Image 1: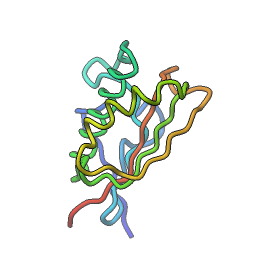
Image 2: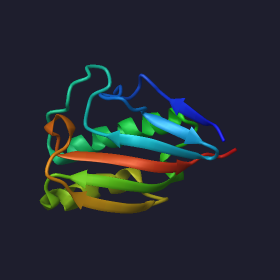
Image 3: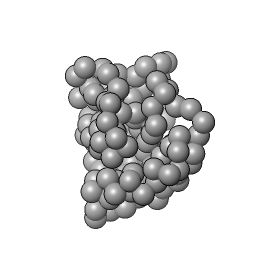
Length: 128
């Protein structure tokens, strides 16, 4: 059993002692993404839809670097600081997962890194 660390400069760099993603056999485990712009490294100052879009673009970049894609996502977890944003997040989320909607959990949390409003992680399959 061997794991492979996945890293790309097309998504925000890890802000702690963790990897952007880890590949294990034919699975890819993507760490939680927050609305950070990869080039500037700054948190996106936008509404929840714009922040969700940035996160899903970041997630897509990490998936691509790991040999996967949004269509191969099996499960996501969405962490929100306010469940009142649920409908707005779903509106943007649906645009990225039109055809192949993964299993999902959504939870409200009291606080997230860098005091953002949303974080999304994922588990995806990889074609071998």
